Image 1 (tube, helix red, strand yellow):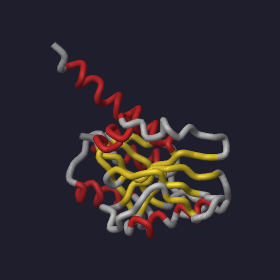
Image 2 (spheres, one colour):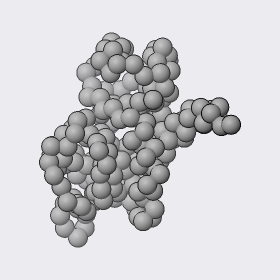
Image 3 (cartoon, one colour):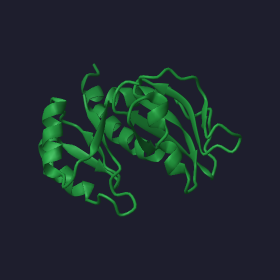
Length: 184
């Protein structure tokens, strides 16, 4: 099954810039699809993670943290309709964070950051290594998103729900021919 790979902290504010679309072409052996400029990839021909990581790191001009998640985890989260009960408002963005490893800390939801009425990040739940919630469109938000690492005891890489929906479209397109082919 496909893997989703997220690079942490690239192409942010002129720091660690590169072109993910070129990286995807260089990793064509793994049938990599690039999504956007933040370092989000769908690996449609997965192999051992260590082998893929070695190939990925050999093509990057700098060190980077990498988070993986299985396509199945995102597809199941989508089927659960996590954001149906939380309609998006113009000043908020739904997000999904992928933890680099299993959470070390037990948490109770919802979590507001900061823990005041005027929150910037609100975590509404988690499923395995996926953490989901919403954040406000504000310059301070990036600092508060960084606190997810401490809350869960593992490094987290965050993408907006719209980016995750793009990932889901690619995963569903890949799965669709298999589903049609197995029908009687």
